[in-house]
Image (tube, rainbow, N blue to C red):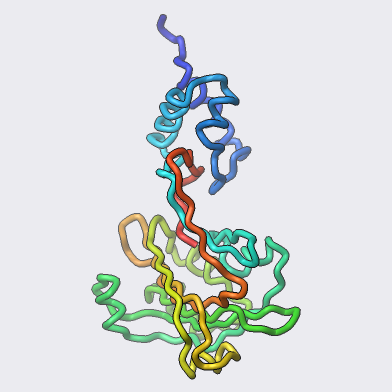
Amino acid sequence: MTGVRLKHQQITEVLAREIRSGRLPTGEQLPGEHALAQRFGVSRTTVRAALAELNETGLITTRTGKGSYVLFDGRPLDNRLGWARALAVQGIDTRVRTLAVREVTDDQLADQLALDKPTFVTVERTRELIENGSVITYERSFLPCVPGTRELPQHAALDDLSLTEVMRQSGLHADHGQQSLTGRRINAPEAEILRRSPGDWFLDVRRTSRAADDSLVEHVASLLDPEHFELCLEFGLSAGGRVGGPTPPA
């Protein structure tokens, strides 16, 4: 019987070819176990064995049905693209205004993130809708001070800057992280930036992305207009896998 492939191995080979050929792009969510079982005419147990093999080879990451993502006016945003591209993909025209870019020392944040070095490059920006000029986000990004980010304060065209691209060029690649969400009333300085009234209610989202060695990639504190944004949590026991490794939280 040498050379006879078991059913789950045959499924593994088919899906592996589709992943390597690009038919299943990086970040693509695989169909659920039930859908795969129907496609290949096998049991869900066989599908699980195939997914386990793909996971072991690093072609996918399996998840126990957990994850979160941001919606804008009910439409999901792919945060791996960065805010600008994620919104543009949904046909939402926005304009970015850079308020400040500087190198700072923040011992409290370094302690919170368990970092040895308290030096960061911070980028403060707002994002507004082109159609009516309303400000929908106020974001503060804290990047490690490394070659590629250290030069940002001297950048000439910061409004057109893609932090996602800067991090890529600086060798900062997110592997995992965590995100928290609260709601709170904005204070007077924040209200001025957001063109709202002090005490207005906003979503306060904190996201920390780390590399595979657990070093910092980016910490972001964002205030999001709850009239447009909401955060959704996905759960279930048969979420299958996602191609190309874990997706940072949105």
